[in-house]
Image (cartoon, rainbow, N blue to C red; front, side, top):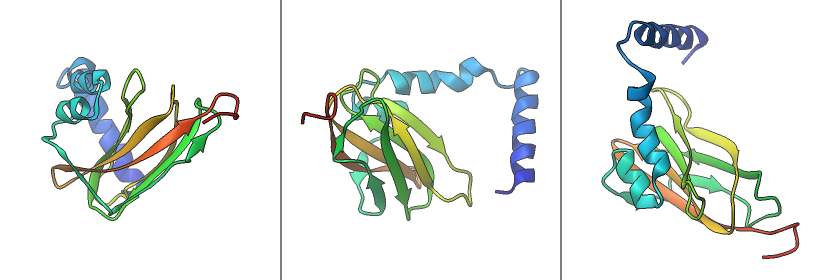
Amino acid sequence: MNRREILKMTTIIGLMAANGLITSAQANEWEKQAFEGKSLDDVIKALGGGGTEKSTAINFTAPDIAENGAVVPLTIATTLKANQMAIIVEKNPTALSGIFYFPEGAEPFVSTRVKMAQTSNVFALVKAEQKWYFASKEVKVTLGGCGG
């Protein structure tokens, strides 16, 4: 997607919102349900999926030990034709840490940082062809860099 297409899409969405065709309440209702989910299954259900399947086509990078739980770096890439990605931290108060959308033709790649309250399994979810796939890793969060 080039710059002109992004500007065009942004303008169209802005006009739709300005004319009342879509409202932030409508757009955010499903996101609210997903972010309120307490488990992997709750989040997948709120995002419109029926289940997940583990995939080796997802390259998920996360540290084994995070010395600072406030900034845990994560990277997700896949060879699947993905249109969405999500990050779930199982033991966080809000399990869903982020959701990302990819227009057709975009490279499905995310590099971000998340906040983790404690040692937990972290799931990288990829939606491709109306099905959710995942990769996971346990990340140990230490206090002050001297624990495990």
